Image (cartoon, rainbow, N blue to C red; front, side, top):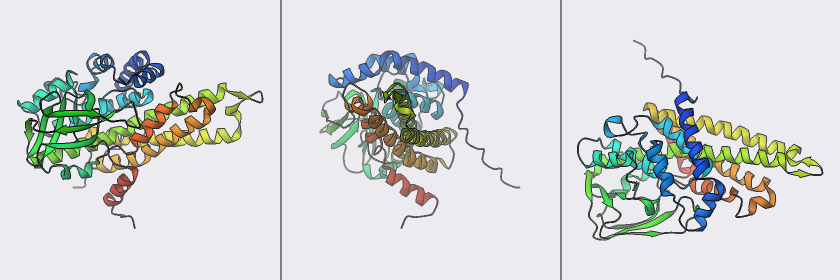
Length: 371
C-alpha cells in the first residue's frame, strides 16, 4: 500500500481569519494608534490594560489556542498568527505572544486535566490572568532542557512582559512551577530595553513558593513546544511589521515632492521599494507556512518555523531600516513611529533564537550541516 502524500500547506486566509483581522485592526486603530503608543512609552506605562481586556476578552483572542471545553475559542495557530500580524502592524504593547501563545502552548502540552494546569489555562483563556515563561526572551527552543537545573530560587534576566504578568512559569530541576508574581520572595525589576513597546525585566526568586505543574521531563518537552510555537508565530508579527513599513514608505514617497516630482517616482527608490515588496511577499509565504504547520501538527513544523524565523527576522529589520531612511529627516524623529518599528524589528530578530541559530537548525534538519 503506497503512502498518501502530505497535503500542501494552505497559505491563504480564510473568511473567518479575515473577519478576525478586521476586528483586531479596528480595535488597534482606535486604541493603539501611533500617538497613543508613543505617549505610552514616554510615560513609562506602555501597557494599556483596558486595550488588553478588549483584545483578550472582548474579541476572545487570548483563548484562540485553548479548546472550548477549557473555556477557550477552540481555534488554532493560524488565527493566532492573524492577531500577531495586526499587533506587529501597530507595535501595540500587549503580552499576546508571551502569554496567549508561549505560556498557553506550554500548558496545553502538559495535558490539561482537572488540576492546576486546567485552572490556569482557563484563567489565561478568559483574559483574567497573564502568564509568562521565566526564561530570557532570546532563549531558543533548543535551550529549553538546559533551564531545568537548580532550585526554584534563581535570577533570570531579560524576561519579556514580566512586569504585567500575574504568573511566572519557572523551570527547576524537579519540574515546572507556576509562581504568582505578587507572592512573597518574588521581585520583578524592570530593565531598559531597546524595544520600549515590549519591556523586559529581571526576575528574582528568593524563598518563593509555587505550584508544581509537571515533572522535569514532560515539562522540558512542553517548554520546547511553547518556544517553537512562539518562534513560529513571531514570524507573523514580523510580517505585519514589515507590511506596515512598506505601506507607510510607499505612501510617504508618493506624497513627498522634490524638484516638483513625487520622490517615489525616482528610479532608484522604485527599485528599493520593489525589492522590499518581493521580500515581504516571500516573508508572508514563510510565516503562513509556519502557522499552518503548527496548526496541523505537521512533522515538518520545526523546519517550517526555522525557515520562517531565519527569513522573516531579516525582512522585518530591512523593511524598518528602509522606512526610516526613505522618510528622510522626519523618519529620524521621536514624533514619527518609524523608530518604534525599527526597535521592535531589531529586538524580535534575536527573540526565541537568532537567525543564525535557526539556520543551524535548518542545516541539521535537512542533513546539510554548515562547514
